[in-house]
Length: 228
Image (cartoon, rainbow, N blue to C red; front, side):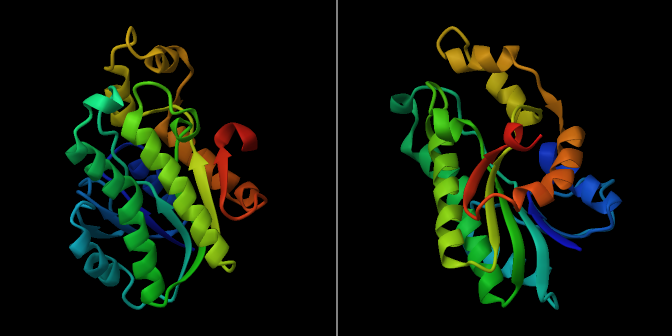
């Protein structure tokens, strides 16, 4: 079994790699950095904002590879909690580039290089549906990711695409969300009060749920609560 994954330096991505290795996967990873204690994987350093470099990095990762069983598009950025009108266009573009368009470049590169893809899972968010006050471009970018993967699903029936919302997971990104002002943004208060999962527990459950994800039509948005 072979896994291609993005964003492995911390949080969910790192936990997914650790779980994949425990399960005997060959891991190909693209990210900003590789933790020193994550060994036994093939890694290419790449800032997903640098679109022109992504293709070459993917090409090096998949050299000699004809098939990838599982692609997890995990890398993502929050931007900032705040009002849409106060969010600079520069920030909007950066979040959209990392959370949406870098994933298009990666998928297109894999296809162009002739790699057969089994399942592609994009890490989405409930914010893509709620669009609560404060989420602004993060919510928009995750909604864009949902639509991007559904579009590919309609074009590529041989590959199973899923937008997966993992719920609340204890990660550096969640810490940034919780630093937002709950007085101004009710969604932050709701997040603070809700139960949360450790990244390692999520990783274990995700691999256990892969067969259930295949029961949903390709292109579906799936919340973890639907499959637990």
